[in-house]
Amino acid sequence: MKNIVVLGTGCAKCQKLEEQTKKAVLESGLDAKVTKEEDIMKIMQYGVMTTPALVVDNKVVMKGSVPSVDDIIALISK
Image (tube, rainbow, N blue to C red):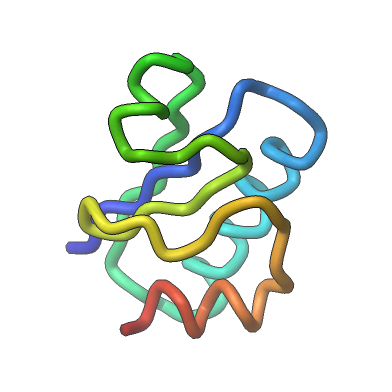
């Protein structure tokens, strides 16, 4: 099971990324758990200064934008 974390403080883009990520997991059929981290100190521990960001299995794979569902599927399927 993949562990996917959406990093964001609760802004509209962060919420959109969380929605898109959950949709991508459903559409891809991937066995994954999606969680959201809003604590800025924990977000900074990932080395992320621009949100939203996407972390897959403890690796930051995207930051600063909200990609399409298809692009997220490509990111989380690696």
